[in-house]
Length: 249
Image (cartoon, rainbow, N blue to C red; front, side, top):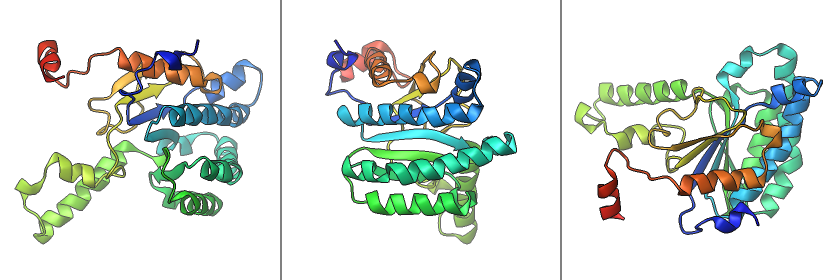
């Protein structure tokens, strides 16, 4: 029996975020180049997206490339960029046929021209789709995202457009890359690492965190369903105590 059969389909998180970690180590443990792990990890992306679509997860955010990843060896970065171009070009028809909408967060203007072109084409082609919103975090830094929002709000205060008392959580949220998207209820990280690595720092404030031991290339639909099942068996208190949560449920 699949773990999927145990899920309460009325309590599926609307937004799941994933740090896809362990591609390089997975490859090295098999005596392969690190880029082989990244290429193999594409299948795990398909598995996670298929699982999310099957249980009606509205938004799936994948941490694909951070601003810190530019510091990796040049050949690995160039290989990642080439893989990104080929993957998007090769998957866009499948995304479209499965009603998946592709969007991005991060400073994509700094990506190579070929990457930006394929992204723009895929985003345009899938823009009217109504299924799962697949959000790729590319050249993404949460600290940069927050700093960018602060600067935008400060400029509005300086110009007199808004006052200090107008600065609310909602205003900050509306100046983030994820404006209009609900915060993730669940964040999954693979490879056994227990940290969030500059990923959605504002948005993860009350998210449930699930750390899977598997490297990303080994992550399957069943692993995704298992993370959802674990999420559904937690009590989300948002600073309250259990009796308050139960009274409000």
